[in-house]
Image (cartoon, rainbow, N blue to C red; front, side, top):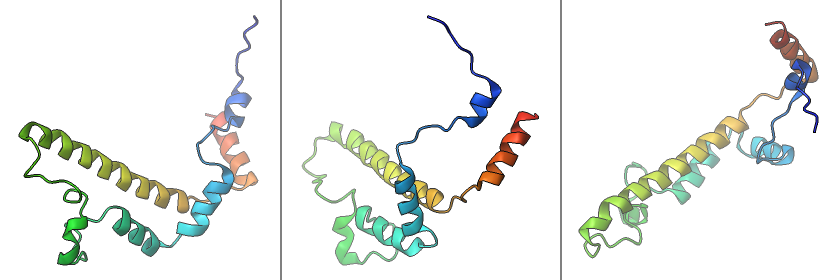
Length: 124
């Protein structure tokens, strides 16, 4: 089996695969670009929190740390792992909202800009 080394041009022309298709990225951009209000509403629905000052007292039970968890009935040795799991889940969800915002606000690179960047990269 013959091994072929990658050239600098191969590296510069490489486009990494992503889990999002071009169409999906376009959909995110079209939906969320300059639309922080929509992201905020989705966050409120998916991750309500009593630390959110706009959450009415009547909806405190929707906070992910209170919803569907009977802390009084839970064995003491299960509380810490449960809280840590909930924190990790919240971090992941919040990170996903940040990712949506970053993708939505990415500038599209023109062919000319891409070629100029590649030329600059190859001269270093």
